[in-house]
Length: 522
Image (cartoon, rainbow, N blue to C red):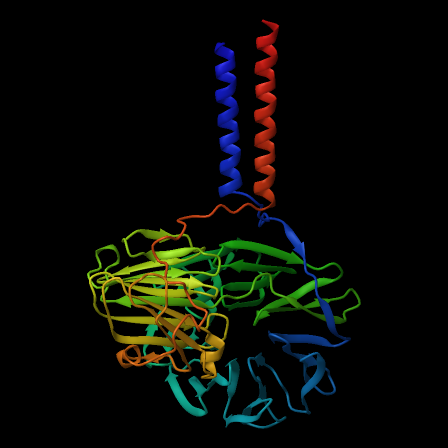
């Protein structure tokens, strides 16, 4: 009898453990120590040396060192193109919405920054162009120059022209310095003398720095979050004297580099490192841009092949949501509840019940406010009146994947007790100011019936909107207004979870059978 009870208890414990694994740890992850083989389509082959490859979506470019005539070749929307073909020496290339490169006439003292749209700048010694959308940054005799929204200006003059500047939606990095384009603010990385800096790059809120330390015996890559100051040592490796990076950069949440014929990608969201090799030949460099990977392979005969494929994960934009005049669970005016397309929730409902089931969401607590950082799309933002009053809601879209940066601001909006205001944003439509970009609906008493709905093309919303008419019914296809009866969590089983369940059930059956068999023998 003692054994029977003990056996059943053990069986139940084993089953519970497997069920827990099914719910919490189902599935598998790739061991970062494994090296995967890059797969993609070859788009170009040449007997000449290839350098400075770059990619943004379906547009790519590279310098082909043809001894007779250096070219800037490329791949644009499915076709091979030549961006530059002249006796001038092109030494750098960068791809955004346009392609930019250096152009120096033989024997001349001056040079140009050219683009696929024409001349950008002509000066003494312009170098190292980088592109974000149609904005270009470069260096000319130690001056950091930029053409932002069509206007050419000097960002800074610090007397150095041997470091490559990089540009994103709102930042320029140049060595140890960061410049915020919208405000002109400048600050230096606090590296605490940890390393000798070689180069840097920026995308969205993240900047990276790379170089050598330990008297040149090791190389490293560091990541810095410009929003909250977080520091991550992404990679460090002891190397020989002649080991160097073939390429380093960041696009969205993906840091990429190649070193000693191996390519690496580090995902800042999942904190996962993946390494890559090629089937035939050796990997010379690897880049990522706009969700695409581009790499060139050196063949045994010295020729080059260029391949293109999808990146290992899509560089992620993110959304930041802040409800002002709200203190979360202590809110005296209103609370914020966010729901994704799968029914997961984040925030507080009408009963001050807290939810935090949206994957990868980040909660940022500040005085008097709760801000939420979200990845992905398809969210409904519901402001729920607790005691009533005025609130302001800010929803910001950050172009972490070299996209656009947009804001939705609901300013000083009046809300009554139990009233619910739903907001849904289509960021692509908002970029083009198309009607339906922002959907707003009002549930006056929180019963799930929408009394007003509005379809807007602008991201600025004032209190007069809510006192106006609006269409009756749920015309915007938005939230139901039922903010008090959501499921607090969901179980999600994948293939790994299913195997855990099946294994647990089989073990339970086997152990019960053993117990029954032993009892019958008695």
